[in-house]
Image 1 (cartoon, rainbow, N blue to C red):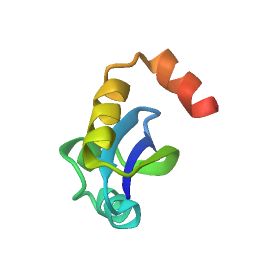
Image 2 (image 1 turned 90 degrees about the vertical axis):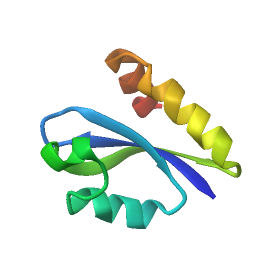
Image 3 (image 1 turned 180 degrees about the vertical axis):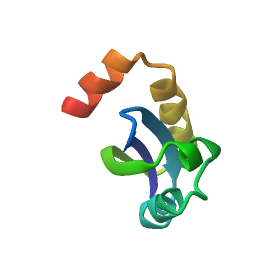
Image 4 (image 1 turned 45 degrees about the horizontal axis):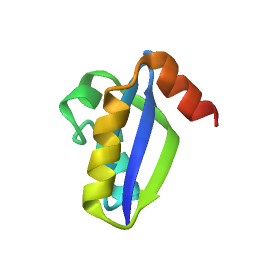
Length: 79
């Protein structure tokens, strides 16, 4: 399976990514190794998660979410 996720960071910002192993990826983010952004914006929790069978579908969804406004991301998270 492939996962698209949104992390809430300690400063209130959001980080969006995709992975095929959500547990390993979240631990990497927590350790400061998951992405350049999360090295300086400590993730505190996963606030949104979507599951896809195909990697390309997950990557397309990640791209779409990254281009959403903050208000659109907040609406997505609240559903």
